[in-house]
Image (cartoon, rainbow, N blue to C red; front, side):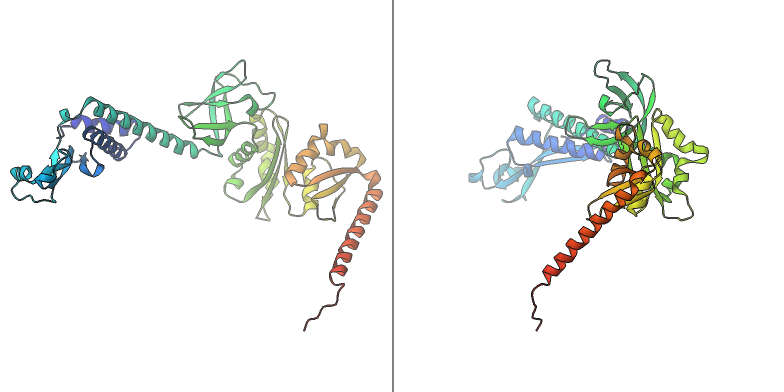
Length: 385
């Protein structure tokens, strides 16, 4: 098939420009499509088909490759040619040589052409999907500003626009109590990219703790440059969030950096989240200090860590701070527990002596059990010779 094919290569160039699909990718798909069509139409194996597509020279050639065989062995006119016929083409041909026979466009049947078109279209579709997947993967775990296109009045789901495509923000991933409106611009967190269907889809959320983390990164230069690090986040969307931060530089106030001058940085995040309260606390590797900080805004007198090694602790607070430490329906202590990874019980300061005595008894009992275990281990005589 000789190529006359300025229009064909111009079309490739147009696809590359408009859809961002490289000509090289499309050419490989087209070659594969034509090979499939020729194999089916002429009932030959792939090594008997030759396709040359060269946009630089404008060549578009398709040919059959025939093995030169002895006349008595010639039985397949498409993949073979007898020596007598071969030497009519060129006298120097010998048995075992291969002859390249160009095909003309009209030599392709309607079915072959349809097969080629289908595979080409499929290749373009796969390329576009691959590009979209890569574009979406680059957004994973990031926050993006999106406009709200419409609201499902029945289900409450919001349709938003991301890179000229639509994505669904489910009602379950919207901040409780938040009322979204068409045309409104909101920040969403990309939780995941689903690639199993016909087109990739973004899973987006406004309730995920990752949204808090990215918002603080956006508003706090010290987090961006690595001076301040977010160590943990716990959140009940629409109500309250606790975030623990730490700085490797002793001269940098990590909490102050996140709050900002006159509270400007944290206020901007609170406004974006519709008034959600945010407690920024200083992270510590010392569990007593970390738990005490996590129960903010309540004051903590002391924290007693379970001596058995379990991640349980007892936090003692002034009697007047008891309800504040526990929070509305237990929210404050629940968020503190998630933030720290410790189970936290709250006790009033008026019962501090009793609580400490119980703690000391448990500590003594635990130590006695350890001592007994060690004694039992070495109860028998050992012969070290």
